[in-house]
Amino acid sequence: MSTLRQTIENQAVQFAEAIVNAVRAASIDELVGIQGGTRGAPRAPSPRTVEPSPVSRKGKGGRLVRRSAEDIAKTLDSIVDLLAQHPEGLRAEQIKESLGLDKREMPKPIAEGLNSGALKKSGQKRATVYTVGGGAAAKGTKQKGGSKKK
Image: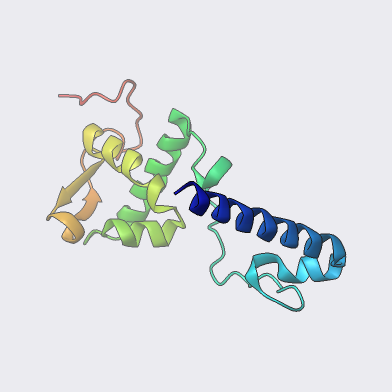
């Protein structure tokens, strides 16, 4: 079994040496052309078909930047303003498209709006429709602390 191991190790060393020698002998243009597994000229970057939303703010790694309470309140205000124009209500995806928001920006303002009474919802899952509620935030007066007034 040790001879099999030695044979495999010898073959691996010879292969690695051959690769290193080939890379040393190659020109820069050849090396750049091989990048990404293609042979020949380097590929041009593919054009983006979907432009990122100008409203969404992305940090490192595509994650959203942490939003302040004021940012969330502004987003909630814009949602309430939009829903005031649509008394029949809108689904979350319609709100997202209308305001140009990222889908990850939606849950917090909607939850705040539901908790404060600024928004009402009916339906379940994708059939959920949001309308303007009768809470203080819907009437333009801001509440502190996010608790409901009774």
